[in-house]
Image (cartoon, rainbow, N blue to C red; front, side, top):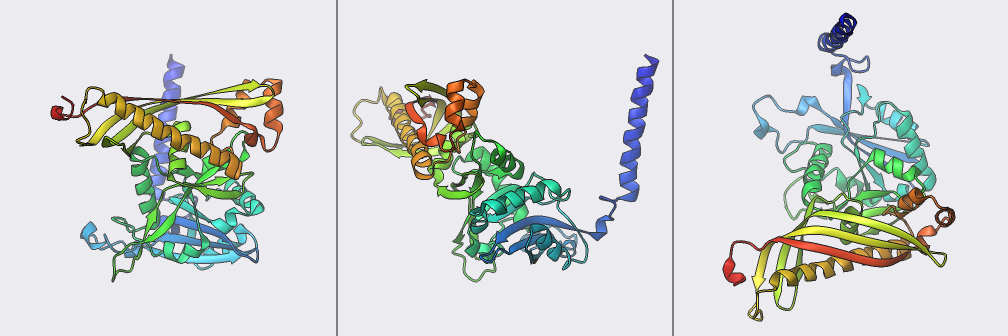
Length: 398
């Protein structure tokens, strides 16, 4: 007992020592904080000549206000943009570092952007993974998005809302949208790396497009659209899928928290909130072919119902709504699965990962085929949605 108390006391002393060391010396990686240039977002590109380009958004503390409150800095950028180039990513980043009067530090980075033309180069994407893994300053937490290289200049001239940094803005939007919308995909660098190295799933990235903000006489002329996803095969970008495919991806993989859908039927128009979704995937081998059964359950809450004069009997309106949304969601998911299979032949939904778990010789034989996803047959799609409330306006239902 005395030995245990002594051990606990020693641990507490060591913790206190390290805490005090940080307080008194204030060093980060052996560098004083005032000598650090903190990155908030980064962009990586590969041009047609095989030259890497890196653009970093670096926090500028000298432009962060004078202490009189957020109102003074709400519309002021507190960052500087620096770029560099080289035949390797290391050389490109070094080129950026040579233009900064402080030591680059990446722990405060919130988002990374990969250009579409770089993502189409398998070797470049493999080098990117190797670069991130080997460098201590570049961690795996930042979000990873794909953007067309023609929009690079627009990206750093984008409205950042209530933030003063592009990276902070993107991070804030994603953390909100993850809980409220299923139409976009949000991937951290680490997840992209893991999925790229797993032979049972293909990686995806979030997709960013820029639209005109329709706000004349402003310096920030563009806004970011986060809908849809970018699909990969063998760590190479192969195509975009729309927001419905992103919804299907989030439902099948269990990432959806809640989202809103609207449908128009002959007798009514209704908007609902979809939540509590769960998906069960069953795989079978039949006559040498691999078949997939998909069973999805979820709850829907009516947020708006437009009653039509054609509704004569409202007794079964609850079941009509459930049936209408089950049919609509079935169509969305089935179309997305077939597009991924027949259009780009990329197993972004990770069915191969589930096949590996079974481990039988027949399944392993199919999985070993490089284009196994093209062999999958979706045997059954069953969606069961339950309306959990009809609202407070009884006159719509009685």
